[in-house]
Image 1 (cartoon, rainbow, N blue to C red):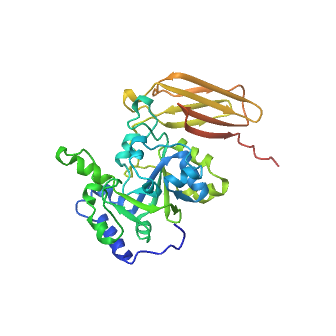
Image 2 (image 1 turned 60 degrees about the horizontal axis):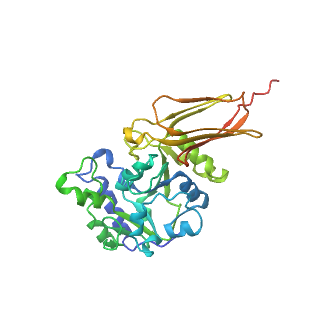
Image 3 (image 1 turned 135 degrees about the vertical axis):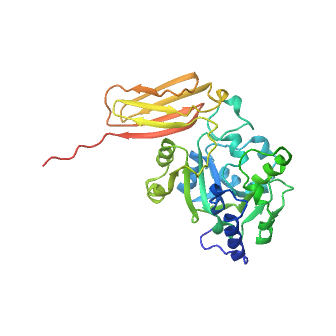
Length: 334
C-alpha cells in the first residue's frame, strides 16, 4: 500500500465506530486503548527487516524477497492456508492474541505448541483508523481460513463481535470456542503495507530494544528511535510465558546477563546457550548444551579491559540479544 492510497467511501463511518468502541460500556477501562491501533508481531530480526525496507510484507513476498529471517508460523496452521491467503499482510485488532500465547518467547523445543515459536517478539502498532480506512483493507470475522467471512466496509466492521474480540481474562467454558475464534479477527491488506501509519514499536525489555536498534541502519534508527518503546504498566503487550534477556550489563572487563525466570519449570530448559564476543582483533565464546534458566545473573569476566566489542546471546540458535560496548571517552582537559 503506497502513501496517498485512496480511502474507503465510508471512512468517516469507520472512524466513528472506532470512537464508539473506545467508550463502549462493556470495554474494560484499562483496555480502552486497544481500538486505537492494529497490531502485527514478529521476531526481532524480521521486524528489523520491515523497518530497514520501510514496508510490511505478506508472507509470500517476505519469503520471495529473502526478508523472513526466522519463520515463526506453525507449519500445520500455515499449511491450511491457500497460496492466495498468504498474499495478505495480516494484523490483529488486539495484542495478546491466542497465537501470541502459543508461540511467544524462548522455550525448549519440547514446548513448541504448534511446531514453531517467536523467540523475541516485537509489536508494530499502526493507527487503526488510518489502516482500516484504506480502500484495500479487509476485515475477518474470526480466524483467517477459507470459510472466514471477510468484508471491507463499516457495516461489516460493525458485525464483528468486538465484545468477544476484546475479551480479556479467563474464558467462560460455554463461550470458549467463539471467544477464541473472535480474538483471531484480523485486518488484511494485499501484498504490502507502508509504515506511514506506524506509531509505536513495542519491546519486552531494554536488552531486546537494544537488539532491535542494533539490527537497523543508522538512518532507520534515527527515524524510529523515539518510537521504539517498552511495554509499561497498564499497556500490556506480551504474555511473557518464555524466557528472554531481562537485563544486560556490559562493561569494559565483564558482562552480566539476567534471564527472565518467572516462567513454568518446563519452560526453563534445557537449552543450548551460546554467548559470543567479538572485538576488533579478538573473539571468544561460552556455551552450554544443557542450560536451564535461573533467576541469578550470569556473569562473565573478559580477558582484560576492552575498548569495543559486540556480544550476541543465542538460545538453541535463536538470537535473544545483540549489543555493543563502547568505552566512554574521557573529556579533553584544557
